[in-house]
Length: 271
Image (spheres, rainbow, N blue to C red):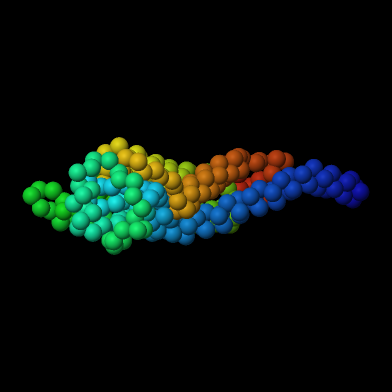
């Protein structure tokens, strides 16, 4: 009789050995997702608080007839854009004012000064005759900025919440908590993706409508903060898919341990 019990136990152990190996892989993947989501909360703060989202280049200088300056480059963040321009001498401005196209001159050999002008779209602009004094301020861009800030803050709190629920799934292996964590990660993915998409839409709006910010012959490329934001989106998406994939019920002999089998059994939640 004792021999039969030992053989039965050893056969059950052999059957569950592949399940234990799969469980180890599952927990490593979910642990990695949890760590990366926690890291992404800090990466997201870094991305939102820096001005390295979009770089607009004017090459050797693009003439702006409205101001008599030359646009060189600009760095755009979520709520602020800083433009670097060249202000020539009065005589050059007078001669250049009759032109409507960029003047192909070497700015390094003429007198003038370089300065950086930043526009904060969260602050209330100074108005004159019903229009903002700063020509770089645009009402549509300000609306885009408010949208990005709102979703950026929401996504930060949702990511922190998702990281907390992900940690809790290791203490309570019940499938419903993994599905809850997956749902929260999907929400954070959606919120961060909205910020990225609105940023791309705002750049397209500047290119089509705001020649003072995005002159005709300028070009742009996305900077490091933009790619950090995309990294956060992809990490949250992968975490959501992983927690959802591993939230399947495992009952009876399909579970690696008796504890996991009992955790996935139906439970009546009382008051």
